[in-house]
Length: 578
Ligand code: ADP
Image (cartoon, protein in one colour):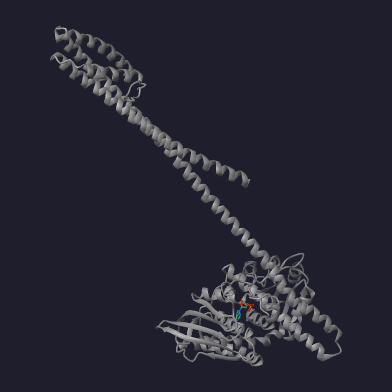
């Protein structure tokens, strides 16, 4: 198919080139013709004038044989094309007819001239010359008409050919542009498909590493059930691998939500100081353990009460500091410095600089360091851990906040990451307000923890292990749980129970027989007092925004992503039953 199109395209191009040459040939030939026709008009005019002159001379007794021979020659040439003036023969019947009459009349006139020379009355010659003049006049007009009609025809032909040429040229251009567009779309689809495949193979590789750890350590742990120390060591390693797996999933989730444009940034008052204090607490021990000097400098900030997304900003800086520590050997140093570069009444321009004296980054890698899944060396993940998603996520968050992020580094000499952000300022009182609200929520949560004791929860979950984990977590807080193995069983249990039996329903999304979304809709549609009011919390490993949206649309009141984080489960419970 592509080959045929290519050939067709070549043919059209050849046709265009031939048409272009043809237009030029027609133009040149036509010009030569027009020039020839103009000469015929001119010479016919000469015949008319020269004959008049000859007649006058002859009548006045001055014989001019040269002129007679000259006129003989021209008349012959105008009708036969043979002669020394290289004149065209005009293929026009009216003109040729007139020329025939002129030739005849010229023959008679030449006889009359001879008679005049012999002493005859010149009156006859004069009369003949008058009617000859009239004939010549008509011949000049006929040649002019012919010449003009040729010019008009030529212009028409050239205009048509030019229009055809331009039309074909435009069509070819449009076609080429359309083909380029189709080509680009195809390439971008292929690129997307390649990116997807590489994403899948990368992610399965990333998952396999900690999974190996978990499976291997579980097998080892089984051997040491009677040796608590070794068992604890195995459990610690399982914990480490699980933690890594979870952070990988969270990163992938963040990345996916960024790419689908579904992340919304918070716009709340917070204190920048708290961000730095949190980072300092988070990394102090780790830096000490690895023998790296960690400095966090933000003393120069005068406006720390700002509005924005506290957690996302922390995530950006945590990622930069964590990388800096990860890639800096013992004896090195890492600094996070926050500077205020401009301050107005409403905004503060900030510069966050994270500097390390670590292994550095090559110039080649710096060019795509902010792309997803990029790591400088093959063994980076094995040696240092990490997924190559952190900087991609950070740079996206920075962009979403309207700022910019850059890197400068030299291999072996350390790296420096700079983030510029402009944040809205707020009054310090707004922070107090926000703190109070948070405190209030905490108190409410703690107070409601007691209320868990009387609760009965309906748990719809097809996976026994997951059901056991959730039941154990709830049991910790004195919550009773009734378990349904699928959505249909959950709907039946809810229907069979007296009103207000269940304080809440925890509903897995993907289950056999009937899924969680369908089951929620069925429960909400029941004709009983608590059908609309009972909180239904979705539980699912699918934690993408679309899944959350679908869950809420099906009538669920909230959503929890698996693996279940106990604190989040309790917080959601207390919020749902508050
Ligand atoms: P991760 O750290 O999870 O691999 P990132 O996106 O945060 O993912 O970083 C991507 C890669 O960039 C790292 O694997 C490393 O090769 C390089 N890198 C990032 N920060 C530094 C740093 N401070 N020093 C040296 N290399 C770095």
